[in-house]
Image (cartoon, rainbow, N blue to C red; front, top):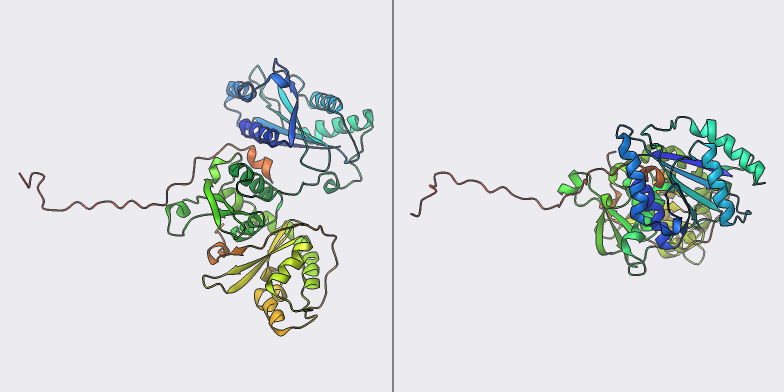
Length: 421
């Protein structure tokens, strides 16, 4: 069993996250503790009001939202009754037995897991200290439950083996509620993809038919670091109305995106060599290598290849989105061999094995991802942990504003107010 605890400032955001999963059919509420009603009788307004009543008792405490995930081994088939018992005993073990909390069973991954939403503000307005709660209380409780209920132990099994993200659904306009489709893709890409620039972030989004737009560089929206998200059609053209970043639960605004760059720069380093090896294997010119053929070859290996084109349609850059490791690289970042110039030369020369294979192979998935064309505007870099981290934060004031400039009318001198009288 693996336990994760996240803390933050927006209990409403956490409830909305879990309830949206319920609406999509990928989660079900299974327990309500200290709500006065059974979980089946509770409406959304009851859930929000119960928590907000407590948080208002002590407005000085800013970190008042707690989100806990209990993840179990894929081999464990746990009935709802056992999950309810585990949730109750775990919460008691970390000192939250008397707190109201909601438990949801999620079904959006290949392993059983539950999400627990609660607050650390008690009925007497005091707070439960969250400092070192994971190390001092959660670890002991987790181990005790593993022994008591004969659960697969977390020790000796890598965290990534225990928690494996489900494949992201492609956003297709008209098939699902547009805003919800955008939300699902954006939150997962922000949570798990390793991008280091705005163009790389967009490359990952566009693999799932979503685009992030800052507006023209001379617009008010761009100056105020605004951001909107739209769905793309099969030809990569925006379709439907765009949605402001600030209108989504979790507030996936530009500042959130830019805050990932530095951390992701280190995280993705470990995956560069395996990606190079897979690309090299596909860069053979048997039967004539074309831009479309290379896209198809890489797609079968779980890699999206994005050709960046200028306004005249000329390819000036490549971006590789490795969905196996969820890492995004511009070709030049991988090395000169993987840049647009070198790859296009291979196609033009008709060489068979041009690049020396210097990388080890990596097991890949046979996912289906679409080719996307990225414009020159998307390629420019911006100046500057996952979905639940930003769901726990309070929304910022809406950073977007209309990109229409209002010109101030000049006052004409020398004209009398009563000139025509």
